[in-house]
Amino acid sequence: MHDFLKSDCGRADILAIQEPYIDSKGRTRATPHLRVVYPTGHIKHFDDPGRPRTRSLIMIHTHISTGSWTQIEIPNADITAIQLTTTTGTLRIFNIY
Image (cartoon, rainbow, N blue to C red):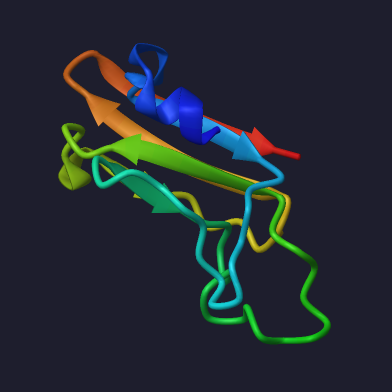
């Protein structure tokens, strides 16, 4: 994934990642121009032994304004979702493992 993000092919606006690398602090790796959206409750409950491993996330390029999208709250470690609002309408993106 690192090679993809560093290459010209990695100029995507929104990436849906499955089975991401998660470090011991509950974070993944991303380039500085990407914002990471984790499943609902991932950071707050990362250390809970009963919580399932996060298997999906969404990365959004920083040129997409944070005012134009919001996370859709779904309490499931396998589902990450956002709602993107543009001048042409609303788009919901779901990453389901």
